[in-house]
Length: 107
Length: 114
Image 1 (cartoon, rainbow over the protein chains, first blue to last red):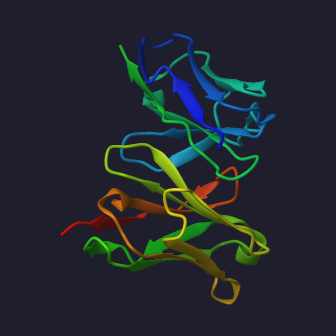
Image 2: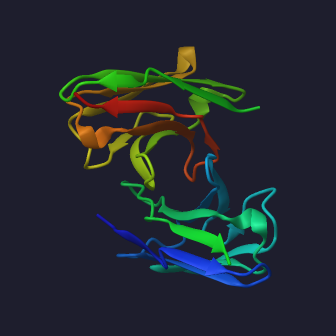
């Protein structure tokens, strides 16, 4: 099975900083990669699908890139409401594995 | 508005069984693929099982042979039969629509403990 890894596992950044989270698949998944945001005590929400397509209603400061095995989620200007754990998920073939998550804090 | 409402969670002893249900509304349930996803306390998301609109089924290795997913389109309902439960199955279980997942239920807590 394809394994999903994320780095870093956690990060701390200042408001307004550019933040980058990496997700890597152990084998190629073309662009069948989604990103989710889970704020503390809340349900996950879909941010990006097909590696780079922004879900409707998601702020434009979020962007995704990558294809094959290496993917990136970028927050162009970190806001206080972006404090959350971010997960990637592959959905090309089963199992539809999530990455372990990246927790984002504000400095 | 899409609504997914899970039920059936609770406290069960190791080796026991539970059946989770998810009542769907606000969309044409029969046309959508559905999933169960779980989250152990303080841990990350774990995909558990999938059923397509046509009945194709997949499981995570961690539950294969113990859990069974099913759906009743006439009742707009998704189910997860969980047998031979283990302590490591303790989690909030979410019903989730589509891949990638665009809607989540509020979840139902399953606690496996003696």
